[in-house]
Image (cartoon, rainbow, N blue to C red):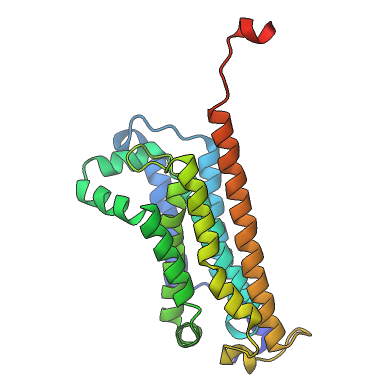
Length: 272
């Protein structure tokens, strides 16, 4: 295990990570910049989309490239759960909001097979199941420990969580005409189902009487917290994050739903 002062000041600069982030950012920049008119002449790009996309990329790097990564990998379970929450609830949502819907529709227009596949994957039942299964799978002891011990598996863990989270967010916030978000009523049921679907793993982690992961059981204690308390803190953190995101999404859905059904009065009627 690495010496803690070195570990906790380490920022990842691996070529795969930095190269991947730079490549995705470069592709986005040239498509919405120099090649904007040739790729999609009707593309509208408010500054908010660039801010969303950039924030998503930055948050992704902070999750997997900052000292948070070695902290969660070597010492604290709850730090690893902060990573997972960013990769599931923050980065994919921001990146999705940063993608212009006109660009997505133009890309899918001449690719019917890909469009069919994406429609299947983002169907609420499929996306919800994939999100819940992948999240739960990586918290099974043997697979969780394997990811901590092998960089390639660790990368697969984080990328799989990120990509199924992208799929999970589409039914709620897609602005594409070819792959639109679902209706507001089903959106609320979908959000509640996602919240309930993750409850078993939260309960398992929080109420277990034993430490489930050897890495944290034998880890150097860098905080005044026992391995079991650390595990329970991680479980509580996961549940609180899940509830906060779910309540925020439900509030947004309800607001947009009521706004959609507000009666539209003419100026004269409003004044009267």
